[in-house]
Image 1: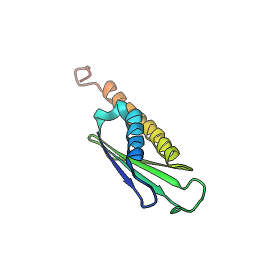
Image 2: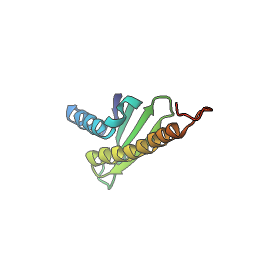
Image 3: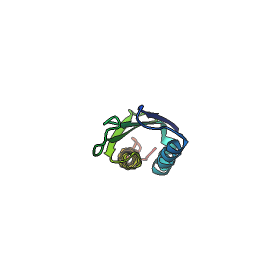
Image 4: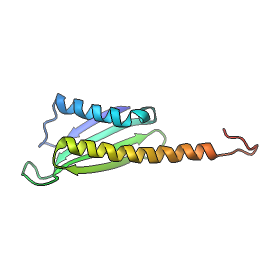
Length: 116
């Protein structure tokens, strides 16, 4: 699983932020890491530095192996809250996606009545 981090000009993208994002991604998506090829994280300050409520946005797009990409976004007061919220949303989406796929595979029967 490859992690790519992108920020706009209003967010300091130093080592501390990179470590925070990678830690959140690995703890949230660790169970799915063998099933994901890429995780793209996009952080932005939608008010361009002006004070306002919920102006930090984190958009996460993942590419599951053999499937279309899945994206979620979360707005919050701080960068950390936006990252955490987006990771939580994506974790739920991935549980749903892979749960359905695993259920379909488990319930699939062949002509001879056995599962592959």
